[in-house]
Length: 322
Figure 1 (cartoon, one colour):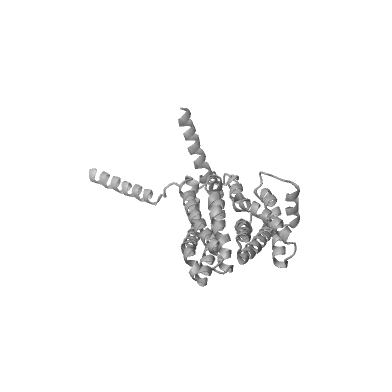
Figure 2: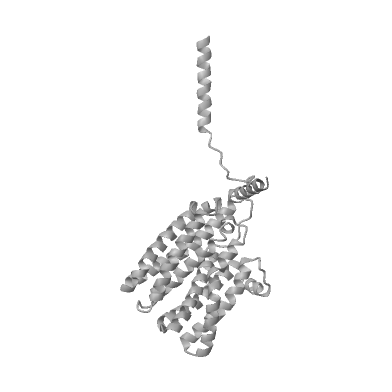
């Protein structure tokens, strides 16, 4: 009887262990099956392209005006043309995201400081107008005095073009963007410096492109450092930058940026190396914008990125008050 009892108990224990073995570990992957916040309804590739083109245009215009002051005609021409083309293409991407051109005009009629695209419209519109006027004068040779004024104005607006999109993304409720409000502007600034410099490295003779090479190397270092801090120093939402599709994009961007940044200081010796380094930096800058965008969307869809940081802040507040 005891042996039968012991055997039955052993069989029950084995069945219990087998059942436990197939039960997966609990994971926080939903909040009543729904996201806590609504992901933005922005389109791909429109908004990532808008982010990339605006930053590139801002740095290109700054570089063009620097070249005008330092006697580098080819660099001046490329910088001014890239500033114009980039800003107009950015306007086109924004209009396409909005769906109809009249929506863009309506955004000019009403200024909404809480809307990233509204603020972007009010920065982008005067910049693109000034950059385009400068480019027309550069190509036609007409009204050089006007070109100096419009070029200087575009140069003043250039820094805003470089970082305003990061500030505005950070102002949303999207966890991967909002929690990175101190780091994301530096990521975008470094990325814009490399992309603007890359245009010059590809299109300008090496003997005039020395400022672009220095800018590319510095921008690459800034971008890599800021992106590393963004992933590691903002808590749980930082994981969105190295998981899934966003993680793959950010790793590709890092590889391209590191390769181009390391090659940039030596690119003055070879036109081929200059072009290859510029293309690598361009790829890195483009993919960075797509990676940041995808990380934000992923963090908005997954409620843990919203709920867990909120719980942690409440616990810290309770501990401080208690």
